[in-house]
Length: 115
Image (cartoon, rainbow, N blue to C red; front, side):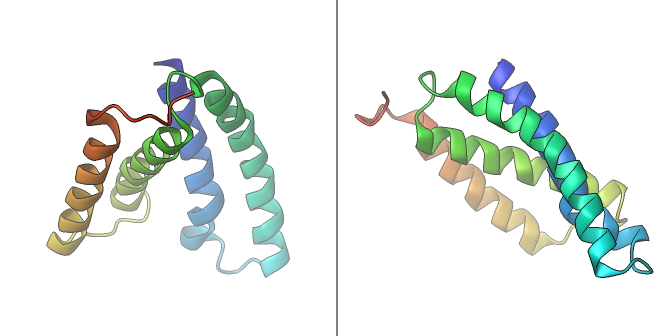
């Protein structure tokens, strides 16, 4: 559970690092957007690295990556709707459903690849 919490925190910071400047940073020179994003991404790494170290063993590497991607999408949906004020279209929902099915298959069955 700590792994999931740390990955959620990590993804909140990474989402702002990658996409936050799209709303307010258009007047910034590109170098400034990159520098601010790197500073935010540093905090993201401070959550992501421990999350993956703690989670590896309980989850396989494949499962950690799939879990991270699902969390990324959930965080991004909240960010896009709340911060960027974008609309959620049916085709995005269909794509998220496909990804949810991928996550189901990654976690629902035992594999021989878990360390």
